[in-house]
Amino acid sequence: QSAEVDEFIYHECLIHPPLLSHPNPKSVFIMGGGEGSAAREALRHKSIEKVVMCDIDQEVVDFCRKHLVANHEAFRNGKLDLVINDAKAELENRQEKFDIIVGDLADPVEGGPCYQLYTKTFYETILKPKLNENGIFVTQAGPAGVFTHKEVFSSIYNTIKQVFKYVRAYTAHVPSFADTWGWVIASDQPLSIEAGNMDKKIAERIDGELMYLNGASFVASTILNKT
Image 1 (spheres, rainbow, N blue to C red):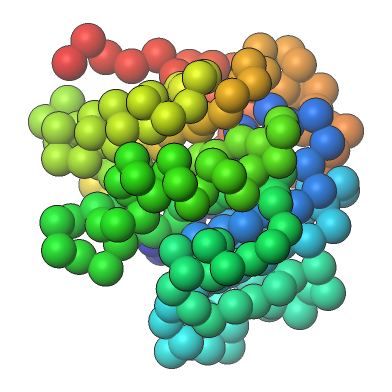
Image 2 (cartoon, rainbow, N blue to C red; image 1 turned 180 degrees about the vertical axis):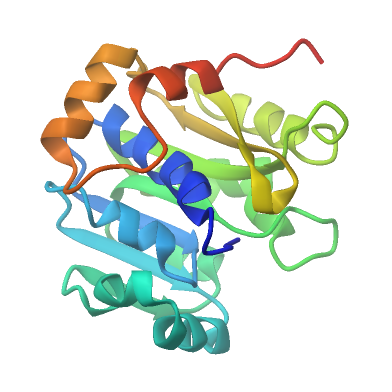
């Protein structure tokens, strides 16, 4: 899910809204994310104690660890637990719970390798029980443009709405994807997305400057077109 020129848009939108909505995030489980960019952004949060990145493809992980210079520090970070495994099996077998669970996976094409990780059954029986009390789930949700949102974006949103009490979809244009892209954030606790409060949290809780996301841009991203 990365082109070096603009991957920061995708990964800032994926990672920071859920972590900033949580009162004190300490643990993150990333399904997929083999290139390391999602882990890199999560590790920028000062409160984080552990990030588990679970990707099934050893070759992708090894290639990105070697060649993506921007992620070298993330791969070397002592807080990162890198696991090569099927994300469903790994999450199911882990004993601990997490403050944030991230879906950084390929789109749910029927019969594809990630399809089972977008189902209501998976969300209800495996993913949600692994969230802590104030836990938040976020997933990439595919193309979300006027002509493309019906491919997977709408169905992902509607599926998650059946499982969590508070659900918000949001979108941003990612030039290298040649489309507007979508994400869905969900929790059983109210989500904190007020612009001024988010800017305050960004300044207090994140190491360094964000390149794309701020409070106003996130609030704007939650306003979807009528289609």
